[in-house]
Amino acid sequence: MADAIRVLLVDDHQVVRRGLRTFLEVQDDIEVVGEAADGAEGIARAEELRPDVVLMDIKMPGMDGVDALRRLRELDNPARVLIVTSFTEQRTVVPALRAGAAGYVYKDVDPDALAGAIRSVHAGHILLQPEVALALLSQEEANSAPGRAGSLTEREREVLGLIADGRSNREIARTLVLSEKTVKTHVSNILMKLDLADRTQAALWAVRHGVTG
Image (cartoon, rainbow, N blue to C red; front, side, top):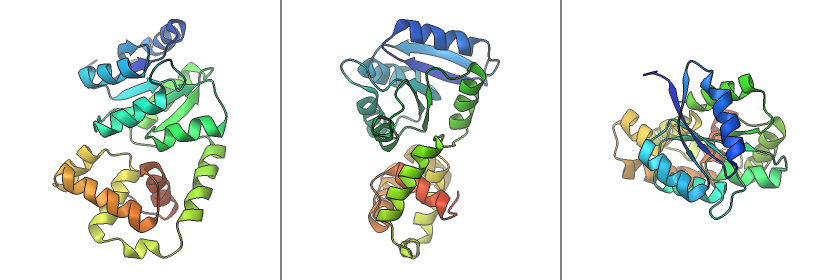
């Protein structure tokens, strides 16, 4: 499966990992390349295996999923992280999205829907339940006054569009033929000019205002 989507499973319950693996092994275009039982091990395995997508639980002993997500972003690991959780409260899920998750699904998700979610985030989409997207957009609109898009340079708009497409700093740098350091500077300027807290808010802002890569 040379072109298969390479997936890493991170969950502290072995039975959950086994179930996810069983779901996914019947898919022709998805390959489970490894497993981890907590956030710290998940980071190590993600750095070692360089998967395309990480299925990550939120609540785990030691380092939880949110802290693991933040660390993966600090390392600029290119894996797209899909949260697989049994928690439905926004106060549980939203911090994970703010930390860099590409979306989330519930643990009782239908196998076909799970495979579809993996394909979607691998393609660069942000996968949100409507109620969570509404909450994030409400916060974004409260923090982002009209007209601020005009303060962005043309290069910053290009970077913002690629953020909305789900690209990592490394991928943006490669696409625009820039250094990663320069891309990080552009991202910081975008967040400051739009008065946004993180890349998730930036991506939602871009989609809302028609800025695409």
